[in-house]
Image (cartoon, rainbow, N blue to C red; front, side):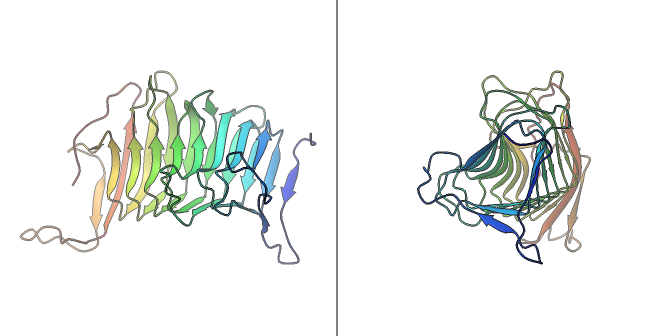
Length: 274
């Protein structure tokens, strides 16, 4: 046990360099490195959590009232942070602020994930991911598995991920209520991938607003179909003017700025954007 509102800061010397925290040499590969249960206001600040490509799971966190600030999560084979039944109670839920998630090499397991919302049981409620960076060979920078409500994902940067977001296949479909605001995507293969359309009967929509997509091949897809109706309200910005006789030169960098909502219970459109 620990006192309420405890802050653990990793700082070395006068420069307060980030402290690197690694699993012990004999740590079982299939066990999470450590767990945070019902945080009671605990905050981890200025740590470099390094799995050294030999540990599958980083941190398993459950309950409410815990935060990670200015922390790095590096080289975990499967999931850097797994949120289990996260709750927004008392002083709030789980908060990730100015953190950096780095997957330097593709572990080849088809699962490498920065933050995973649940495993299918329980609900993740009130999680905030703010001003973070997701870099490298993530299969999914953020993966939604459990029902998710009142999530806020804002002002983050996604770089070189295969998928920035995945809403995992679920039978039956699960609620997915999140506001994805003012994030930047660069050299990402797919921005948003819905393996199953979410259902939001009472919990609000999955709303994406004010984001920048730079050199992103597919903005959004579900079951192999790209989501982008012909009357899409967003604009497409090209590096240089398009010659109407020639069309768009191959290899041009595309930058997209657009807003779209998936209202409660609405079917996903199946039109494409080229």
